[in-house]
Length: 330
Ligand code: SF4
Ligand code: SF4
Ligand code: SF4
Image 1 (tube, rainbow, N blue to C red):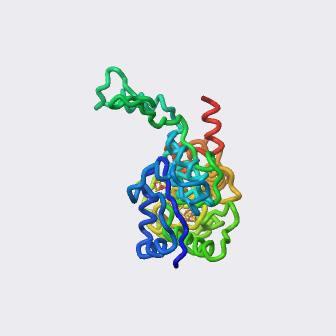
Image 2 (cartoon, rainbow, N blue to C red):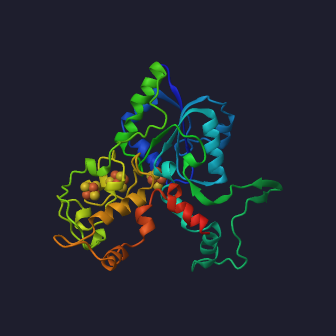
Image 3 (spheres, protein in one colour):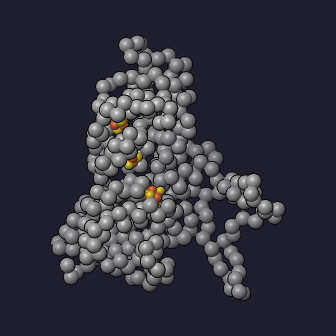
């Protein structure tokens, strides 16, 4: 195709797994190359921030942003991309919901500096020198990015048109971008704003394992049990986030007999993924053929859950209701 869209791929706090996922398109990356001229992708090519700054308003057709917004530079890139792009897609769970770097919201910047620059056994830093935002080099004054106290999801910073969740997004979902780009090139048409490029159903709806509506009376961590490979993991006592998680990933973890960790985030009807999962667990706590568990028994069972916030909000803490409470509580 002669006509190409201008495509930018920007980033915040990222592990670059999202970049690798794009490269995992394998031969389909050639289809992407035939549809798109890359105008900014610093992870893959030698692009600088100044290259993005030189691009004019709305000159980029589609931009993808992956990673959590964690520093002033990440926020600057998000605003630049938004201003210069007709369409902006939150790409990956960090961008859509805050992701794993968003778990930083359980602590503060000062506590992180205290640990990293003072308390670790290998640190020798008697003057407790921490990262600064102003410095001089060869007589020149430099302003450096500021680490924010909170990690944020992209939609908390700029207006986002579409969402492509996953940690990283499944290749099958990234492939769905290709016909969207083709249609945009041929007709100028795009999907409705706010579309999530994934399934509208829960992961349980696409899970190959059998649900028997069994109650659980013990919670296991994955290494504590060899599960029956045909039965629902949650009904075997392994915490699987499937009931509270959007489908579309092809049940990748389940197919490897590992529980879902929730990386696709919640479905449209669910406001708070962790709260939804807690209510799903509450509904299956019990002992088969016996009356409901007492409050004490339920508490004992819930106490078996190690790291509840990291379990229920692993990918969504910055956008969760509980995040606001943690911050309001100081
Ligand atoms: S969504 Fe996952 S793969 Fe993508 S940048 Fe975040 S942690 Fe890495
Ligand atoms: S809870 Fe997990 S294992 Fe069970 S049906 Fe849902 S996705 Fe499958
Ligand atoms: S099974 Fe769950 S954690 Fe694994 S890729 Fe799918 S949504 Fe993500």
